[in-house]
Image (cartoon, rainbow, N blue to C red; front, top):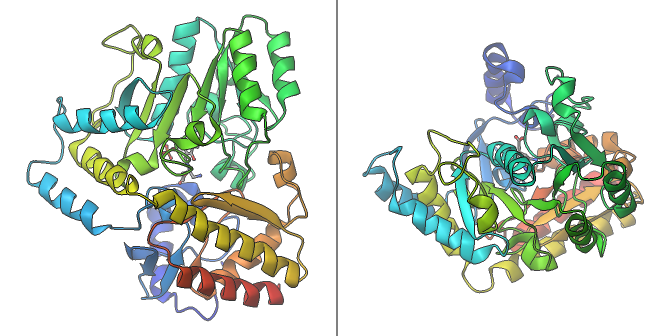
Length: 433
Ligand code: KE4
C-alpha cells in the first residue's frame, strides 16, 4: 500500500494494518478504505468544527463531514451539550418518547411532501421501507431507479448503484438473487425519454420512480432543468409514485431539501444523515394516505429496536434548530461556491480539463471537460488523476472524499480562510499533476 509521503502516518498505518485482520477491508463501510484513491486511509482520532485530527496528530480541513451529518461543523457545542443532558435520562427506551414528536414535527414542517414520518436507524433502512411502501400502496412490483444513484445496500437497490459500488467498480453485488432485482428497472439519470419508454414497456406494473434529486453518489450531478418536473408528470400520468431519496440532500440543499429548492413535491421522501446530527437515524415520510399503510396503523410491516432513539432524536433536533438560524443556507452557498469556482479556475489555469459545481453545501469536481449529466459521463472522467489529486491534497492537510464517485460537503464551521487554504493547496497539487 502506498502510504501518503511527507505526512507522518505511522500510527494510522499500524492501526489500519491491525484493523484489516479484524474487519473486512479494515473498515466498517467500504468507501472509507481509500481503495479507489490508493494510499493508506487516515485513522481519525477526533473531529471539531471543520477539522479532523488523525491518530498521528495531523490536522485536516474536512470536506466529507461524516458523509453529510456534520453540516453545523463536527461536535457542535450545542449538540454535545444537548446530548450530555439527554444521556442522564438513558440511552435507549424502546418505547414512545416526546423527543420523537418534536423531531417528527420539525421534519413535517420543513419537508413539503411529508405529512407523516417514520424514524429508522439508517438511510438504507429508510429506502428499503419506502420501496415496500410503494409496492404496498400501488399493488405493483416494479420500480425504476437511475444508474449511479445509491440508495443504501438493500438487495433490490444494489443495481447499477453509485457510491461504494461504483467506487469499487463492482458489477453490483454477489449474493443478490436474480429474482430480487428482476423488478428493478434502471434508466440513465437526466433521461426522461428512457423513463417514458420503461413505463410504456411495463404498463400498469411500475410502483414508482426513486432517485437522488441531486446526485451525490456518482460524484455531484445536478438534475437538468425540467427533469424533476418531467418525472412528476410521468409518474402521475401512470398512477405511479415519485420518491425523492434525500438522505444526502435533505436539510443540506435547502432546509426543505431539493423538493423545496426545485419546487417539485414527490409522494414520498427518505431522509438520514443531517436529521441525526451524527447519530444513527433514517426516516421516510410522505402523504398521510400512503403513510397510514405502515404498521401498526396499516398492514405494511416495518420495525426497529433503536428507531426513534432518544440520543439520535436529541442530536437531530438540535441540529435542525441550528440550521433554522437566518443566513444558514446563504452562508453555505457562498463558501461552497467560492470553493467550487476556485477549484475550476485553478484547474483551468493549470491546464486540466475539469467540470463540476455546487448547490448549497454540496459540491463535486470531475477531471473531464464534461458536461457530466449522468453516471456514464462520470465514468469517462480521469479517476486516476482524481486519485493523485486526492493524495496531494491529503498531504497538504485537506481531506476530500476518497472517491471520484462521491460528493463533497462543507459546513457552517468552514471559514473563508479554510477555503483560501484549500484553493492554495489545490493550485500546488494541480500544478504538479
Ligand atoms: P446509510 O444506510 O449509509 O445511512 O444511507 C444509505 C444512503 C441512502 N441514500 C443516499 C442518497 C445516500 O447517500 C446514502 C449513503 N451515502 C453514503 C455516501 N455516499 C454513505 C457513506 C458510506 O456508505 O459509508
